[in-house]
Image (cartoon, rainbow, N blue to C red; front, side, top):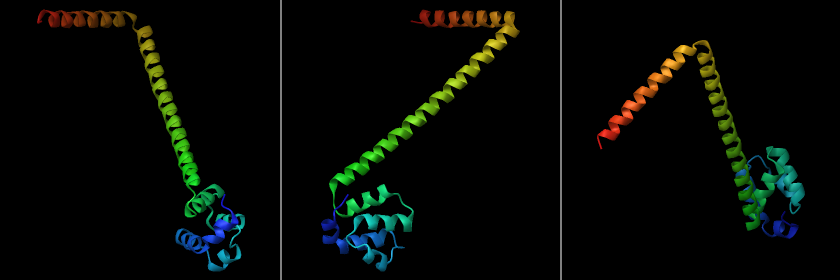
Length: 139
């Protein structure tokens, strides 16, 4: 978090950027918390509803603190990675359910019609054998 000297030293720049981003902040509110980073973050949180982390990250950015930018970028990368992992897991679950359902349907069909299932499998085998033989012959 930024210290009082940093905040005081760049107050006009910080104040302008804060009002640019959060127009609902009044000059009076900002003047009341001038130099007090904790109070400033509290006022911005209360007025805007943004999280403490977001407000602090923005203040660090305004003050030119490179470490804050790296921390914010790392947080964004971590959040994105979690979203990707959750999405991949959901996709896996959907595919697994679909395969399980298909297997159960095929098993049910075979149990209800065993003779037809054997005939279909035999026919598919014959057709596959003919296609493979023709392909090998044309070489």
